[in-house]
Length: 206
Image (cartoon, rainbow, N blue to C red; front, side, top):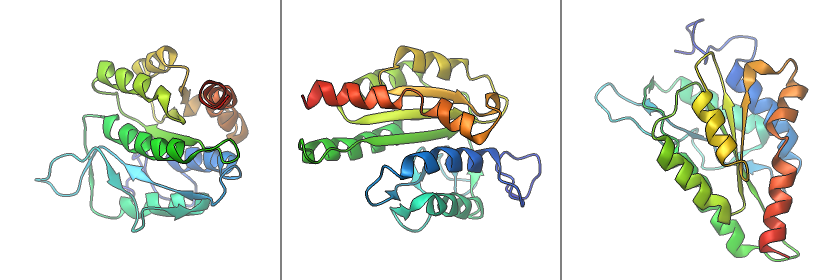
């Protein structure tokens, strides 16, 4: 509930941890996007008490939003849509959606027109289905995709840390609370990205 002060999604005059994460990483990345248009997806929610948990859904009215402010507006719009946060925490669907976009990019790439997809996953949940998630991430090494996992809140993120250690070629984990300033947080989240991009391009576009 965005009106509940104990919620990680609490809306007030100050940004919550999700918004801080989006702002810090999005601001650092958007300058490298030609059109600054982004997909915004959610996962782990029900939109009715009797509905099944959705592990992938569009945030906002449009499939693409403009800039970081558009991402924040899309995120906030979902908070007031009457949804219920619900486990289990499953990343497979959102990872697949990003990989599909990255595959389309790769198919259209030439030496003079390169592209790369960065997926930012902000989560406060303990992940489900570790082995299958790791397998999928390893498969997605063949497309221009890096995945940044941000741990929000005080849960145990040891599985996410292990996941990223085992798939460092295209993933990064950062605990939001471990960084003292937005700049330090963004630096930690993006610390592996330059090498991941250059390694992919060297491998597939020499």
